[in-house]
Image (cartoon, rainbow, N blue to C red; front, side, top):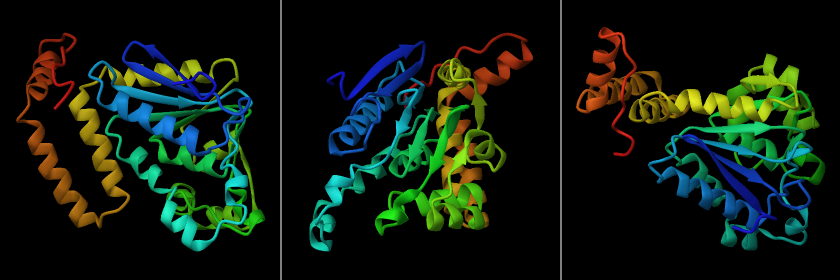
Length: 259
């Protein structure tokens, strides 16, 4: 992948994807989205990776979509091209994804962070959905995931009136998980990733899947699915290893890195 689009690094079992497009502003055009999604899918199938961290530059995680793509775009054209279908592939990633956000996360930039499983931010992070200023509304999950994350009232204000949240407020309302100084936020995101990577991989993947299901299923149906998947974990070797390690007061040795 050209380094002016994105860069990748390995930190033990954590794969870091650093968006590096349009002078670090990371406008989400087709080139960058394709690169991000294909790289995530590659790491998702890599047995040496347990967690993915997605970040941008210190100045901007992403300022959102390339507005020039919308100029003179009509209904027939955009439905035929269906650019938002690419986003579904992010949600299909089975391994945990942590967004490490600094600076602006606006429009599609906020939405791609919301599509990740956890968000670690620097003190300079600013989250917003300014699409209404263009005669549009958030169309890549912004209305749906944002309302589930921060509640109806605040989501309304962000989507209808371009209210933006600084890092500390975003933490307070539950939009993000952690806030750290600018010089350590990425290190802390990777540290969180490695902590998760030390857990049983199959159990982590199943727990992620169940929490995502909880966002969509009625409680009774979700509880039944949770129970079935919980029982199914006992068919693998890691459940026995985890219990044995606990009883023997030693560190477990996980084996189920891939199904």
